[in-house]
Length: 472
Ligand code: GLU
Image (cartoon, rainbow, N blue to C red):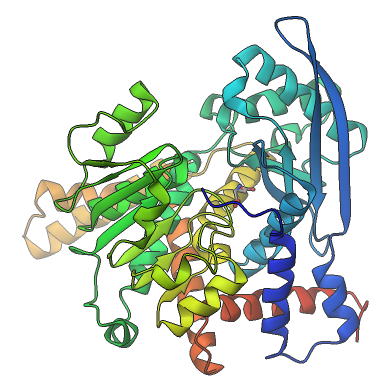
């Protein structure tokens, strides 16, 4: 994957903010306050390895904005983690939450390790130690800062975090809300695992539903038969590909860090994922052409390119060769500032990360609410609703003398489960935000959806500061 020592995600994000600010009237002090990271915590701790040696691990937690509390954002385990990266990712969380109207400030955490080089016992030790470092400095808590999964972490790590937090805070009745993305048995929520990918699908579906925008790109509306290339088949890439395929799109290329697969007839994503889990590579997968240098796959012809791995993948170096009509940023920061300029000049539509991958934090918000209320969604009203709808259906049948068929009856009577409500909340958030962002782009007569998204987000943050009386 592309990697450049000079690159700073945080600087890129600040520069996107500056672009948006040109279309706004903001007090310069306020703009400066919005851009800065409010708190940065960097620490080191030693881990004893299985062979008796020691490794000193670098950890970070950055809270970018306290304009709303708690702050919110994932924890990344990767050897590429550094201060600039965590700062940039935490800033993106602030704008992401503001953009989709979720009441959190932004944060991000990182641990500089390669999780593949550690066994489960060591990973547990590292996660618990990282958590106790956060507790020590009050950098975690349901009202303070609420981590979640990110690249290299998942529900298992979140379970270790909540368990550690509870051990240090035995009387905190809200302790479960100190982290989201937990396993269901540990007070997680239905749908969180697939939420980011589902949000990516909804966002792309909305984008391709706008006739005048598709006309400009020379595309028909709808997802049916759209050719898709995905980079990264982790949690986000896999679920994005799965829902896009189920809606009629065709995934023709998948790029992973250790090689890609190309098949113009379409790739069966669940089958490929199964092969990857078993073999740790796509090499030897018979149903497509194996591509050694997978980054090249991003330059192939397709309708929608979905980078779902890491930042800094489409740079000024490869941007001129990108042939996609639409790029949906499922990862955080996959396109550099310089690259985006080139892509927009080529007439490519970029659906920005801070909108497109906001499904994860949206469902995290629902999980946090569930933990604070200590009751699962739908539990109280489901049966009551079912009885009421049954009464209504029976009354209609009696009055008309006509009967609904079983399918119609079931659809009307069914009360909403936790999963139904989560998906409904996710749909509402993603659909509304897409059209707000696109409308803002048109009102401001600009090409970039990203600039439009930043304008919306900064506006909300600015109102928050001015309503506190901090800035004029
Ligand atoms: N790590 C995810 C993101 O980048 C989710 C954050 C969360 O759920 O708090 O948006």
